[in-house]
Image 1: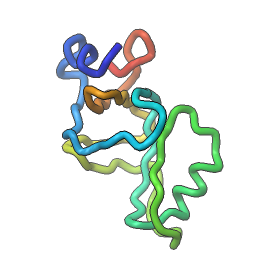
Image 2 (image 1 turned 90 degrees about the horizontal axis):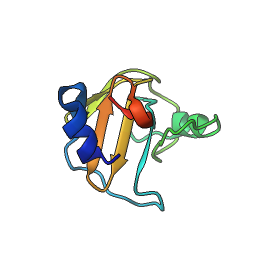
Image 3 (image 1 turned 45 degrees about the vertical axis):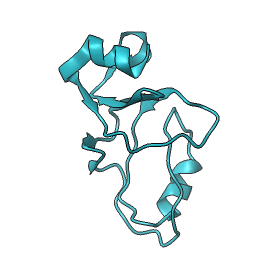
Image 4 (image 1 turned 30 degrees about the vertical axis):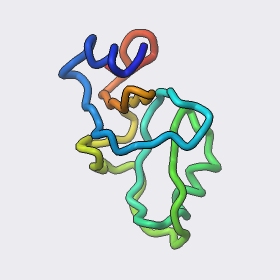
Length: 107
């Protein structure tokens, strides 16, 4: 199910991110639980997170000082990203939800 279809089906249960994101990898669509960290330009926490089982999470590279809290709410793209909630991304956009909906997608 695409993020556009999810939005049609689940409307107010979803947060829709602003179109700030670009695809740099092979996978243009994915979904899974969120894991967050506040690590402004610091990749020590990101490196630690990458050494753990991914379970569908997608972190991003930065610098290496090790400062910042992990698994706390963060806000960007007009979405409040909370640890353990669900996200789905594809060519249509990125959406977040409190829990997966039927078919393993947000809802």
